[in-house]
Length: 340
Ligand code: GLA
Image 1 (cartoon, rainbow, N blue to C red):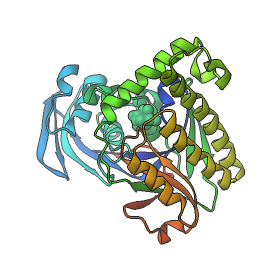
Image 2: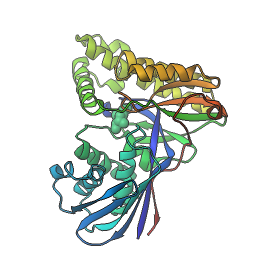
Image 3: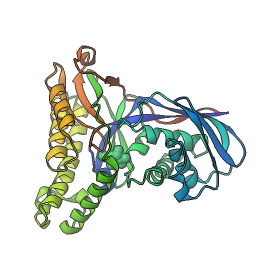
């Protein structure tokens, strides 16, 4: 029996920057997904602790068929099988401590745990992440970047990760003592997230082509050549967000939590005004959190259009918060095989 575990993630800052090779600063969290698998056979059979309907599909499943597998959670595993092409399948079970579809990367955690249970080599974390990113794209049809899967694979206990998505280098940044990270679900489901995500990604690519310079290396002064005002704003978000991620990592390193929190709130304004992926509900929740004693900054986290808000706060803040659906998250280690 192989038991593989993979964590979810929260992104502290750097959203909609990964797919143009920008900077992100997420952390793996203490909640995650476990896949237990008895290897054998030429199909995958999985039960879920949260769904009475089991999944069953063949190892030679076609790429396109992965997106049609039922129940829908099994699509992510089918996507992994379609990309990884493991020689052996197995029977087993999936369980998770992550809220599903809340913006904490429950799908990435499932993909990574499934990939490890199906024999993906833990010695090559980047390859596992790239396999799972492709699996997510196949399963969901959303052209996601690599942040979620790479964070789940490569998380470091007690640290956030500064990831350069052009080189895929990861620098672990210790979370300063005295900091608390709180995730609050907005109650708004991310219904638009898929189609709007693809649209935003297309706009970033169009903006980059119009600017004539990779956004990763651009500054605000390089955006004058983008004639379309919407595309210019999209590019401005990406360029300013990359700068904020760098400044945020520096603030964590020096323990300057006040500046780190302010950068998160600036990121929210940019996601709202320039990138237009926030919602009235998310804006109100960020404002409400920022008004709580001990909260240093807050922003939406992940793709936007609903889902979760993340706040940076002084230690002890979570216990006194007067908002519902708040979870204290801790920077945690990445995916691992627990038994073999
Ligand atoms: C989703 C995607 C990531 C990233 C974020 C936005 O979580 O899966 O690749 O693009 O949205 O930062």
